[in-house]
Length: 189
Image 1 (tube, rainbow, N blue to C red):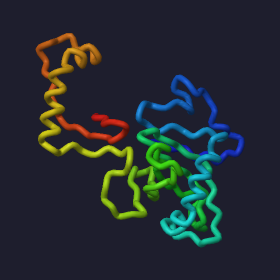
Image 2 (cartoon, helix red, strand yellow; image 1 turned 120 degrees about the horizontal axis):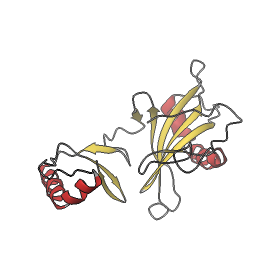
Image 3 (tube, rainbow, N blue to C red; image 1 turned 180 degrees about the vertical axis):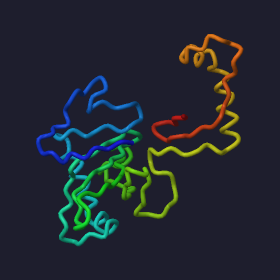
């Protein structure tokens, strides 16, 4: 995941919303939140203010201001927000949180607050649940699931060959490993 902070006040994050520019999103990936839409992210951050202050060890009088953000739509929305840091030795801090769908939580209260480290793509959670974060990938280790994936590969082998432009039917398509992502269904990669 690459993340560019919006530190230039004149940058409107609106370059080329289609076709691979700043505003485009890979399916299942994160996309930049446009400058005009940062108010919505700020509202969620305001709801989480006390939790953020505890997580990042900020004073109660610290003003937490969103400078830039990314979002990933899953069964709800994951956000990564670049906020103004209240620490003298650090200009910004990054947090990650999840906002459920209105059908799951009519109030859409943000949850799963974590400090986010873009360099290592790791995070420390405000709760020590040990669960995979909502929208995150985890390795598939259950043998029954692995067997099911192998069966599915056999079922879709001709489509895979066409998709990958594999003309040689003698080469085998072999299961190596899989990861799953819980969304409104399950995505395997």
